[in-house]
Image (cartoon, rainbow, N blue to C red; front, side, top):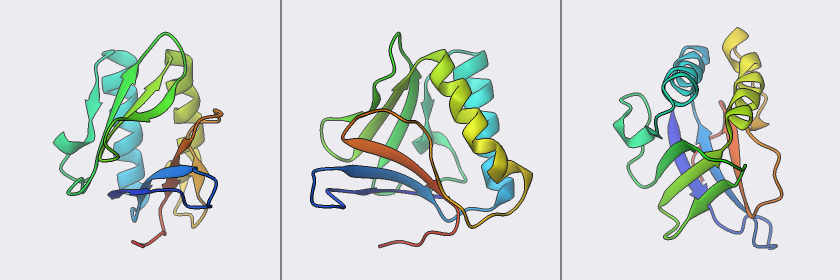
Length: 127
């Protein structure tokens, strides 16, 4: 699984933080991390600490908050995905199809009106 960032991908100052190039087994591992660390233990999940995710150029940290804020960053290298408990539970629901079978589909992992989206795309390749 790879993590990257696409700045202003459409000319409208909209950005994408993207998790890509993974299989069903890695999707299951990722879902289980969200479930166990963020939802159950209510701890931050720092993807730079996860062996199967390449965070060489970028990092993504998931954390609970009182409101759904989406992806925030100060430097376009370290990103924070800030959602409520319900926001993360919805993310698990959106991850479910990738954990059930191999798929070439992709999915945005939250639906908020923010400048940066989080894209889950198993068959995408580096730009």
